Length: 190
Length: 417
Image (cartoon, rainbow over all chains, first blue to last red; front, side, top):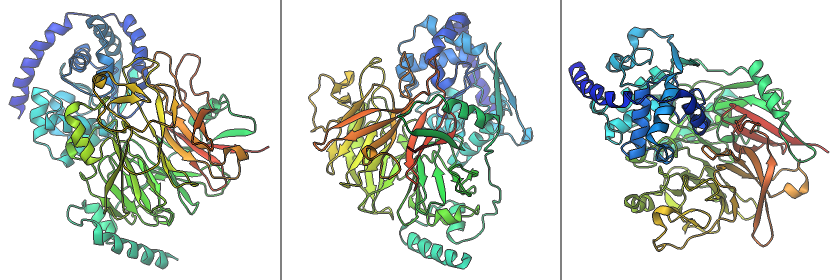
């Protein structure tokens, strides 16, 4: 399993390089984030359960997701509407703003009990340890659960996650979701 | 008393088991059905005093309402969504879009809650947004893709172990591959025909062509009803985008419901809707119409293949009309008797935010309706939300409860001359 993950990630890292060259302007991103804040918060700490916390995600992750919503390879009824109006520059600016926030997780459970299938990329406390992976700390359990089901069914596409989710039962998915949802997340300005 | 309750519950459970599919029952439900302890003892309780409560009270001082009305903090309830007031007046149940149902108790009857704790902590809920009571005290919880029933919930909630039955088992409310997060916040009600009515939002902004027939056949993007044991399920309304509020007119017995309309067509179209279901089987126009008589871009050149029922009242675009109820109390002035109170959650991406308020709709003899703001002030000078109302319910004294899932609270609106 680990080998599969690493091979998968190799490809993604290469793809990620293209995005990273286009560094955005965080000040411009903060202005644009006015249209994100009702759901994701101006600092990226989500205000509603269906939206993930995005403050402190890497610029690459935010850019890839917004681009995927824009071109239709990832679908969500709200994000699809918002992202299709964004230019490459605006996406880079938003990514620069939200990635400039600092995400800090506080894990009270024993890290040894963390879901082993996730920790190599997402960390035991849900702060990602590889560039391609999002933080999961403090996300609503139903958000994580929904994403894992989407990876399992193929509705959301990612070479590593599709493979990992394929091997998880509904109960295992919920257990993973509950683990990361229970971590406390703090987002602080740069 | 205790023995009486237990035997009453056993009867209910026995009745429930006859219809509920006992195979496939999660282990906890099986244990609860046979009145065994699940071993779960701990409740999560929510503190009701302190800085957080004070900040909410401060917000409420800025809420504007007609003369004589007062709004106060009733309870701190995290992620508070739809409300079911127990018919005995003992406890109020509040759904969430997360994994908890909260029970709110005003023990000393000073019209402020004394205790908020989670309901049935041994059970795993998934988006238990829809809560509703039958007049004889059965609590129904409509989740993303399951419906449970809790006999005598107003008594059993004091214990972590409750009586439970399964009305619709996991995965049978909608096909599992249609599960989503955003448009699967259900609402439910028991109608005058004693049947259970449940809204089934469709998971898209605009339903794509290849899904239309599937949704017509399954009731997704519509409203279904069934007997309280889950049998005789039928689709009673179609062409509904995502209804998150419904109630029966106590005068006529007709179902009325709000509907959330299409995004991405600009700030000012399409309007939100309050609909009147005058008979079973109507189609309310989605996806050919995006709200009111506004055609969706995706289907604008197509002939509409169904007869469409237009809303009785339209509301400002993107305000997100959610929970609604007919007022039947005697506390408010006479003109509110039979009026609809509804909650606007507030827009999510409109240039200038709109909504975040309580609306009132007056119905005229000729069947027309006018909707106007009743309580507002949850959007501050910076265009930031201080609260987002979700649902309205009536207490036995004729005052109203309003839920707010941003602040995580219930408010109580009362009237005195």
